[in-house]
Image (cartoon, rainbow, N blue to C red; front, side, top):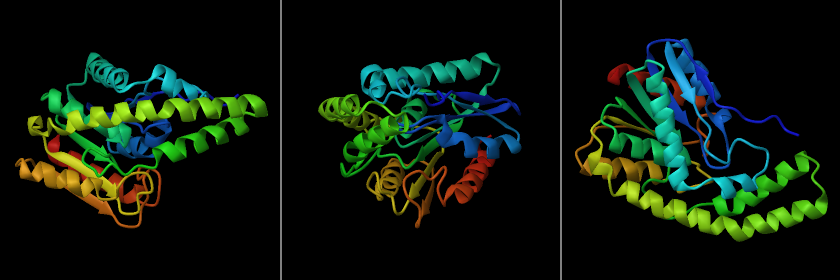
Length: 249
């Protein structure tokens, strides 16, 4: 049995940052960035989306949905506020970026935030459908799941995954249609070698926001892949986020 992933709240200074993780992942995506920001006197909360807090990959499909993950996001914001924080920024990696964007569209009290490798505006290119079953199989093998049960689970995932990904794509398009509601300066980080989504996604988002006369803080990491919070771009990303936060708080 693998250790269950958990949310974390690093309580430090009076300014708070919420970090939303990626699809089929958990708050560990955000731990390096969170520790960096904590050292700079920020309090950082990283929740876990429904279905992502177990060692069973099927739970993401059974217990998760865009609507549920948006509810998780709202609960996270309300929780941080209930802890006495009024100055809050919110960022999200990939899937998390969709809901960080929606939060900024719908909650003008948030001071800022943005996306890391998020397909808000894109060409539909995605490797999630191929990579998720591979990840799930690796998880089952790590857990030494019975071979027959493993194969049954993978078949179930391949059958049910497309519907959820289609729902996410439809939800993302609705979020993209509401970008005009954003009033805060918007941070965008994108890896130039993104292997999961279109590497042009970040620039396309910047162009769309700029056309709406929105302030953007765009950063391309040319040699980095998808998970820029932990890969070879993470040091540069951390500094860029730090500089952005100095401007909005």
